[in-house]
Image (tube, rainbow, N blue to C red; front, side, top):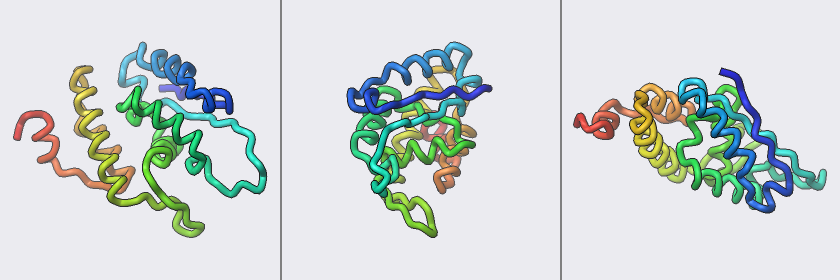
Length: 161
C-alpha cells in the first residue's frame, strides 16, 4: 500500500474545496479497501505570520475545511496513514483539545469519546456494506486514541448480541 498526499493550500481551504480529497479518495478506493486503508496524508501549505503560535488545528478556517470533509466522508479515518500521525491530526481538527508543551495534545475526554463512538458506528456500517470485516480495524483505531473496546460492543453492532 503506497501513501498518497492530499495537498491543501489557502485557496482550497478558504473556498472549502474538496476536489483534491475527492479525487485522492476515489483513486485509492479503486484498488479496494485493503489497499486504500491507512494510505492518505494531508499536506497543508498555508502562509502564516511567523508570530502566530497556533497549531494548524487551532485555525478555524482549516478546521472548517476538515469538518466539511468529515461530513462528506465520515469513514475517512480508516484511510488515513495512522503510522505518520494522520489519524491524531485529523481528530485534532474535529475534537476540542489543548496543547501542552510537556504532554502534547490533550483531547477533551468526553468529546473524544463521542467522536470515537460515532466513528466506530459509521465505519462498522460502511465496512459491512463493503463486505469487509471491521472488528480488528476498529479496535486498532480505538487503541490509537487510547480506548479499549469490549468485544460485546462489536457483537451488538454485528447483530450477534
